[in-house]
Amino acid sequence: MPAPIIKVDAITKSFGTFKVLDGLSMQVMPREKLALIGPSGSGKTTILRILMTLERIDGGHIQIDGEQLYHMERNGQLQPADERHLAKMRQKIGMVFQLFNLFPHKSVIDNVTLAPMLTKGVSRTAAEKRAMELLDMVGMADKARSMPAQLSGGQKQRVAIAGRSPCSEDHAVRRGDVGARSGTGRGGAERAVAALLRDRHDHAARHPRDGLCP
Image 1 (cartoon, rainbow, N blue to C red):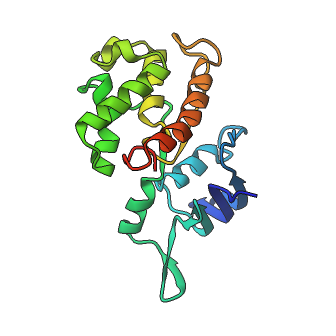
Image 2 (cartoon, one colour):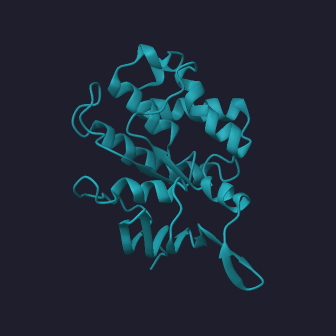
């Protein structure tokens, strides 16, 4: 049986006296798609922010691909992770934000190529070639040179999905509804995410050393 790609073990998180997460444990297996459902204030966004290291946990452990997220091993013992370890782990997981978070002064293709170029040292030529493949998969190749202000909400969403694809990071999390924006149709963005997940494995098999699919 394959090992989980994300393993959460008894984590706790409080904001002041309000305990948001109290001994939460869960795991995500390879190719599994997991939805967090619950009322407002139940901790859904907090979990995603913790996985992105935007919030620290108070207790417990998280593993990404078998490696501790908030801890590191020194002299055979676990201790709190330093910034260098966190920076390395951030390369393993990306987030599609609810408000897309595209850089307004950069074109569509620049928004998609920025992360692999800055975090993994991929050349512009290789990054742009891969970006065009990803944009084509989400139906946005013809908008590669457009600016975000020229796009609809649904189009911005698809660019964000391509930019945070599992070939920019190992795993992707996203917040909020992605299925009913203009230009995607109900479930359109969901299909785009599923296609990108499948493509990650195909691309890694074809190009195992290009740095775009770890």
